[in-house]
Image 1: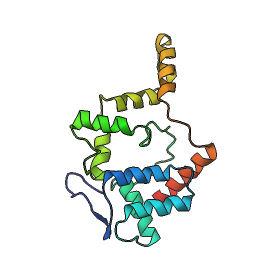
Image 2 (image 1 turned 60 degrees about the vertical axis):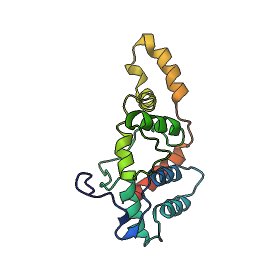
Image 3 (image 1 turned 30 degrees about the horizontal axis):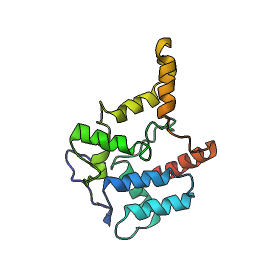
Image 4 (image 1 turned 180 degrees about the vertical axis):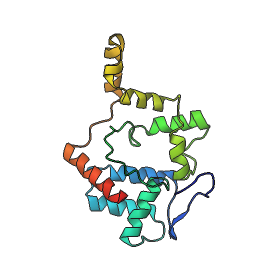
Length: 182
C-alpha cells in the first residue's frame, strides 16, 4: 500500500518503468471506458500507455495497471460499484483545468503532475464549477423541494453526461474492471 506521507512518488512497478504523468491515467481511464474497443484492445492500449520501457508478463502488467489506477492502494473488493458516473475526463476536462487553476493556482495543462498526486487533488476541488456540476448530477431529484424541482431537473438534463453505453456495454466494462482488480 502506498503512503503519501512516507513514500516517494513511484516511478516503477516491481522494477518495471511506468509513465506516471496524470495524463497517462486519464488516457487509460478513457481507453477503458471506450465502448468501441474490445477487451483485448483496451488491455493492450492501457498497458502500452502505462509501461515506458517494455511490458512485463501479463499477470504483473495487469497487477501494475490496477495498482497504478488505484494510486497504490488495494482495490476495494467490498462489493459491486453501482454508483452512476458523475464526471468524465472527456466531457468535464475544461471544468477540471479551470478548477485546478482556481483552487491550486496551477494550469495543469502546462504542468507535469504524478497520477498519485492528481487523484487526491481532484477530490479537493470544492467550490468550483466542476464540483457544482458533480453535485447536480449526483443529487436525487426526490430530495429537492417541489418549488425548485423543475429548475433542478432542467439543470440535471443540461449537465447530464451523454449515455454512451448500452446495458451490455456497461456489463462488459464492469467485467473488465473486475478482471483488473483480480
